[in-house]
Image 1 (tube, helix red, strand yellow):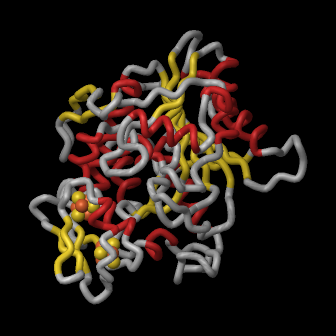
Image 2 (cartoon, rainbow, N blue to C red):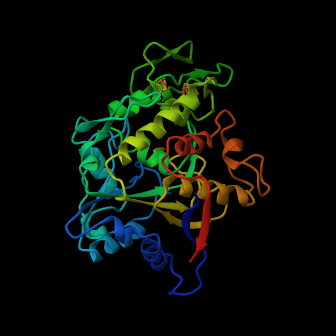
Length: 369
Ligand code: SF4
Ligand code: SF4
C-alpha cells in the first residue's frame, strides 16, 4: 500500500507562502486534526538542541504546531527525554535550562515543557514488544501516557546511524537513558593513534569513564564502554571511528524496535513532521552545528513514519550536494549523501527494517501543497 506524504517547499516569496502558514496547512492536510480530540494531552516530541547547537528546529515552527493543536481544543506540551551522555540535557533541570536558552519556553511557544522521563531519567514504562533484539522497551512516561503524539523531526545526518529522522527522534529520543544504553550496547569505537593528538576531549565527554589518556593518546577500555559514540562526535581530529561489523545494523534495528514500542499505544493517535532544512552532517546532540550539505528542501508531514522517512531521504539525495561542506563526494543528484558523510554506516537499513516491522510503507505519493 502507498502512503501519502504531504510536502511544502522551503522557498517562499509571499506572506501566504510563508513556511509558518505552510506548517499549519500541512497539519490539516496530513490529517493531524484527526489524531486528537478535545482535552487530549498531546505530546509534541522534538529535540531542543544541545547547548551550543544552532540548527535545531526553530521555536517559531513549534509554536505554529502548538497553535494548531490548541485549535482542536486539545492540550499540547513539548517534550523530550534526557540523554545518556554528559552534556547540557542529562537531567531535567539542565534540559529545561537548555531548552529555554535555545528559545523554547511557555512565553515563546505557548505550551509547557515537560521532560519525558523525569528529573534523572528514571521515569519510564516497560513496553512489551517481543521483537528480535528488544523484548521489553523502556519508554519515557510522559510520552507513553500522552493521549496523542506529534513527532517533529529535524532530518539530518548522524555519525552512528547514518541519518537521523523520525525513527531516531522516536526510537532513541523517547527512550529513557537506560533504554538508550540498551540500544547502543555492542557499538564499539576504536582509536587511530596516528591521528589522535591527546587533547582528552573524548575523556571529558565519555559518560562511562571508559577512556584514559596514555602516552598522550586516547585509550578506550572496551569493558566499560557503553557505545554511546559521544567520543566519535567530539573528537576534533576524527581519530575515533566505529568498528564496522554488524553493530551499526543492530543499533539501527534496536532503534526501530524502540520506535515501534513508542507507537504501540498510539494507533491512529500519531502524526509526523519532517523538517528537511539545515541538513547538517551530524545530529543536534552536538554542541556545535556545521553548515548544511544540501540546500534547504522543505517540510513534510504524514501519518506514516516510514513513508515520511523514505521521502525525506529521497529528497535529500535528489539534491546537488553543496561544496565547501562536510560532503567530500557524492555531490551529484541521486547519490547517497549520508553514505558519503558516514561511509561505515548504511543509514537506509533503518527504513527497511521499519517497514518489515509493519510501522508503515516505503512506497509513498508525495503531495505538494
Ligand atoms: S568510549 Fe564508549 S562510552 Fe565512552 S564516549 Fe566513547 S562510545 Fe561512549
Ligand atoms: S578527542 Fe580525539 S584527538 Fe583528542 S584525545 Fe580523544 S581521540 Fe585523541
